[in-house]
Image (cartoon, rainbow, N blue to C red; front, side, top):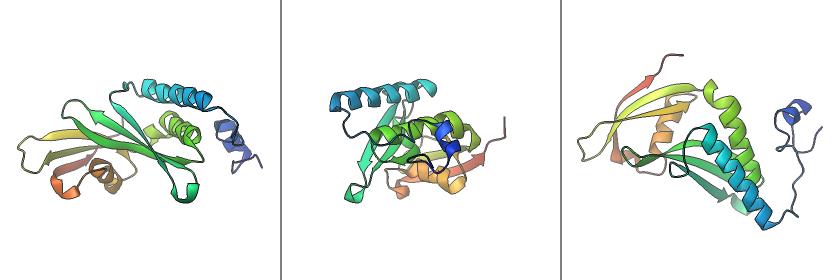
Length: 160
């Protein structure tokens, strides 16, 4: 078994994920690596740094890091959850996010949600990748009161 991997096949998919933790990496080197991977994700998705937020959360008891990548729609100035990953540190969580973006994102269903904020008369249309409708709605509701949004329709987009 390869360290940190469930199989040798997993080790071949992403060599970074299967490397032992390097606690001796300097803070400066870690920051440079984090910035490099974040840029790679932004470039792969064709989004700039003003349209993506990398939100890191230390898990309880220091048991790793959860990364929530949030996209910001400049048209209606709202933010939505893109995807979440977990790793033993920020670089590991980012590497898993990069793997998701490259290998798995397009394998999920595409949904169109039409919605508006309570008290406003403007209809918004947003697009999500999710395994099912509840996950797409969770991504819409991320970080906000679900009662503050009216959902008019959720549509599974045809395969392209």
